[in-house]
Length: 242
Image (tube, rainbow, N blue to C red):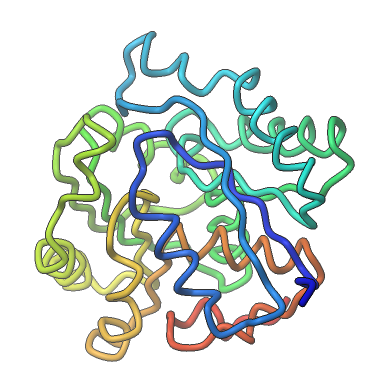
């Protein structure tokens, strides 16, 4: 049977979480398939070598390969714009669409859309990143009028290692941030096994939790003309209309 809608995901090469989690999120939607292309990302830091991983050239090459599968949307399923600056994702989306003719989305631009739509100005932030990366993220959100009222980060540089963080560790970090009663919590990294925890923790804590694997799926569906409310059991983000 021919699949009706195909979603393309640009994936960090050392990421082992987003593909199975994304597939699980969409498993109840039999008319949707998801397809992945990788480019090199192994370290998250502010060093020149680490920053150079996010040069547009290899990302655009991966997007072109996804376009051969005639996908209906292409998403950068990664969070680099949170420390590089949001304009980097805006530029990337424009270049992907110009090169392929396919609508483009990113985890971070989708998160920002959700935060704006729901009126969030007081944010809780959980990441696995190191101090200076986390500080850059906090500063970038402050610049668009969103104050990080509580944050936790794990001080890890190795991208592969993010996926090895235990779910109970992530749950405890989220609970610690929730104690400050932000309007919402962002789990910002697409190589964490946080998304399967979100629905239960939202019920426990009474706060929306926006995981950046989920934001990429939400906006990819919107770009492809699919109502994301068809995804059930993965958190409040999928209660938001297209």
